[in-house]
Image (cartoon, rainbow, N blue to C red; front, side):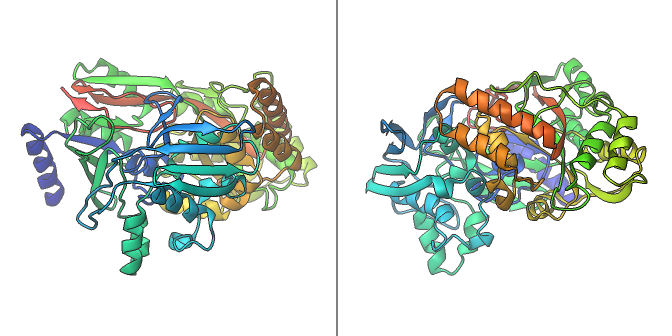
Length: 526
């Protein structure tokens, strides 16, 4: 306690001096500091949006593609060849563990992409060789070749046209790492450090990490875009939303993630604070592992969907700041099928379906509850308790289980669960980012498809949709895929929530990211 108190005093003192320190109350610990091997927003905020850049990026606060480490690009007529012109003069971070001797070039692009693609790459198996996003999006089969034309040109050849390819390139997992740093670590026999002691080209430089407590960054004075206005960025890891709110009120934090819905009204009345809100490109869901009995039975899955009182969850957990979900896509994304009927809350029908499935007396199972506050589920434990009570009414006796966030994610990828609470915030504004990443057949092995559901009809539709440039034609295919999902129900979709961020009145330059990230490169304190 004494150490933490002294730390906070130090932060407050540094804020009063010329150097500006910005403290962000985050909700959990990152599972790593390399977006190639992570998928969760907690980790992306701590690495992808601070330390790294990509060839292309999203314009701040939008889903519009813009240049980043690539200044421009050309696409062939057949949509299978992308020629990227790279930015010159971009410096990698200098840290206490690495000092670059050259600037960013094509070698870094090839290293970063081939690490994920090439199973024989010197770094492919570092950290377990698990590249969930890269594999879930079938990038290994999609990308035929990555070729260095010269130091500042890279040519990527695809095996087939891919409509969301540029948007996918702007996603966190396509961040560019330093090959020179990787070579140094290989010589030192410390290759595993690349995922937890990051070196990038981004707006902030990683300084230190104390697990479950603090992450420290300093601004990158050589950043190739607008230099950050904040000198020091601190992530104060605070899992409890009520504690985050207290820290905001006392000035220990300048901005907090995911305020508790019960606190939002109070925050809006506080003249020292301001609250931003936006429609979330998200979905919260209960996934059922169809590889495990009795969840391989569609009638069991339908019975669970009928037994869950979603409106009660919206009222009690989201306090009305969410919409009931019926599809795996949020209603804010194009191709959402508004004509699909949601599951009604009907205990009698649920019992009838369980009997039809051979479980007239119900059964025992487990339900994993979210251990952290997420935009799509602000209170996993409370929702779990409500789900447990709902399912008990149809004879399903549920044991609630949870783990710390990194363990929860790791175990879910391996399919150790039976039922699990999870959710998703879109990464690129394309329906493929939901339907393929979360429910596609390639995503079963990759780990992001936690229902382990591989349906040939569904998969054929979403795979076909990726190869078509016409949004109208893609929409038809995605709507048909949503109807297949509704028939087979590997999930119980729960909610699409409104996003909130609360901050001190003197915070300027912050925008709610429609893709769910917290991005601080333009933030300042007035």
